[in-house]
Image 1 (tube, rainbow, N blue to C red):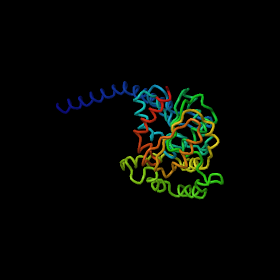
Image 2: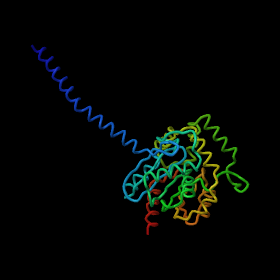
Image 3: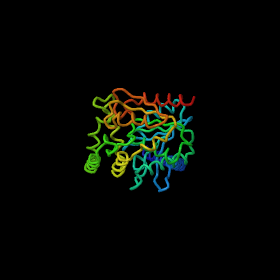
Length: 313
């Protein structure tokens, strides 16, 4: 008797579960559709079909962040979180070939990269924005302003820029020799991960002020970047001359640079940029390396905020 009652109980439980799934599955399907739709909303399609992933946090005056070579937009999340909580709209996207964006074979020169930025700004209908870059992304900002003008941009912040020109030439004798650049690309072709790990100290400094865990996280951001993008973006970064273009930019510009930057030495980069640009001011972080985007993230976020507020007056 007890056995028959137990079997009836199991059958009843099974029926309840079956009936509940009839209601739950449509709900799950709706949720899945919402997830797919939201994912598509976070993608911009460029004219050549490349899909660019972006994130859009907060409301208020718009700041668009462009990330460093090889990583993705997550590297800006500390500054974005602070500024979004301070009343700004913060948008960042993964460069083509990087992170969650697709990985085309071509399009890693600054003309195309600047066009990608333009596609983002026009698609999202952004105006009166602040552009904030780190490292190689400074070239994207300069080329965008040269090609598309300043109608949408009120000000720029260039942090640790590899500007105005990194390659050694007859009229740029203190630059990096072409053979050194080619050798670095050969190292990447042989062993991406070993090459990147060898550059940790040049990014974070000889005595990092961040945790080992943050360093490992920073390295992990390279994992979703294609080898093609790494090599070709570095080539563009090191071999593109922005000196003439920078002379024509007159919107308010804040340069932020560490005086211990060995990847883009201060005297060769931001000090020259300040001289070339018509409306630029330089803030130097003492004892700071190239990777101030992480090592001085809080100070940088507050400096960006102050610069925007000061230039709104």
